[in-house]
Length: 253
Image 1 (spheres, helix red, strand yellow):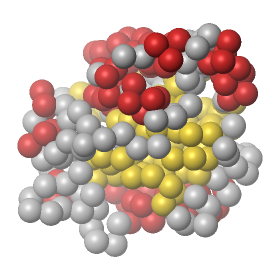
Image 2 (cartoon, helix red, strand yellow):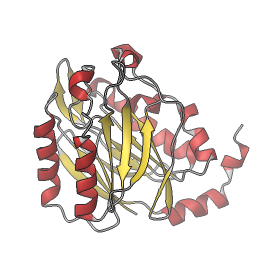
Image 3 (cartoon, one colour):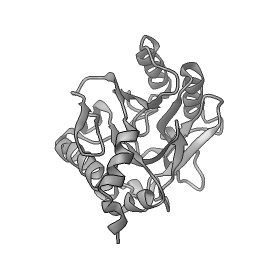
């Protein structure tokens, strides 16, 4: 499967600017039909705790953009959005849409980043989610989830063959980001794609380093700190053969 990772430098709390920038970055990129296009966590605003600004209105313009891109490129598109406010709270979600506009998955981040107070504005989700695209079972996760391997095992037990992690992961801990992505690939015998933001927001710097690893933990790509679009191929047939040849997953507790 062909994967397209969009490492975006989000304008802080500026949805129209970020929507336009996403369109611009993808406009001149040749993308083959049937790809999986991935945008970062909370791509509309950056990692803002101001839910009144970050959350979508009832018209869900962020999701409308993802649907638009899915139709335009005849591909599945996954990105991070904040759900409309209910009782003063939002949800930090990863959502994906098919070219016909149908929703493929809606996952609510299970591990809010409590150090920033995220749990006070975006409550934790209760379970992993799996969707199928191009015959591959894919499980999305969001940022801080990556530090909790126990969140990934149930998804793999339920059939996930590939993992996608979207993030706003800061530069000060970016080595952790890359190594934990690699660890999730190795321990779950699954290709892993991580799409991070780059640039700056108040008080934080982001150095991108969006990365992908195959089922053996071999790097497929690692981006630098620039805003960019990266493309790679996921060889799921070889991953499936490895799971049969080295069936370590059957020994999961």
